[in-house]
Length: 286
Image (cartoon, rainbow, N blue to C red; front, side, top):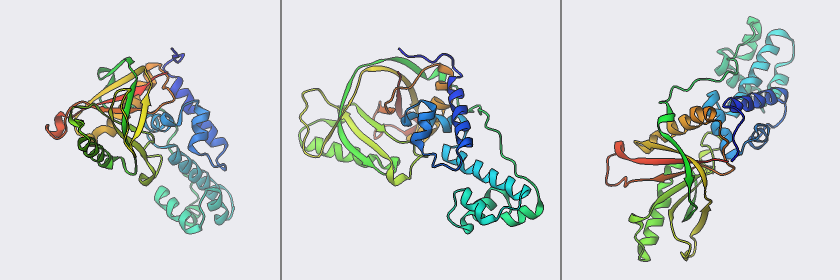
């Protein structure tokens, strides 16, 4: 079992990432590299970063680049087109729009006013979500074999995958209504365009299950898992992830495994009102 040396280790990792971002503002700073700096899987890094700091890593990069440009505008005579390129914008127009949105003035007017911009310090923000310690249980979960379909696109459309699965299973004499249903979400929805998000809609099958053509099999290994029970509409699940990653994980002293979180749907959403829908978010632990 691998435990962190202290609960604040997650905050230390994020501060290390922030230091890396500041020192490499002119580099690409892709998600995989930042996750490597944090010594976390990309599956979990982006969710943890956003939940704790209140913005995505990409937003931090844009914010710090614009801040650097604002300081240069106020304190130097550097040409504005050069500052736009340094901030990562391909055109002066795009830079001006972004800068105006962030600082309330176009770059030239900001320079004339001669005031350096200010951005909020990179402190760890306290989440205002309901205390997750009452909803999270840690325990060993057995291995699972899932049969289902890969879905690429907005997560809210994963229902199409389940509908296809149930239809195909029913046509083959299976009873999908009695099966345990799961979804795996491989990406953070704030980290990629909605059209590129990858997920998996599946139901539990036994080891001897013979998949039909086009059906995918995904094995989830046994292991210790932090399970967060969410009761309510599926549309509220992002807040549940915010609470799990933003409050419970940093305070827990635990290390996430290099596997994506997955959800189990514990009751039938077609037979109950949304206020009674139960979803268990499972976060694999190292």
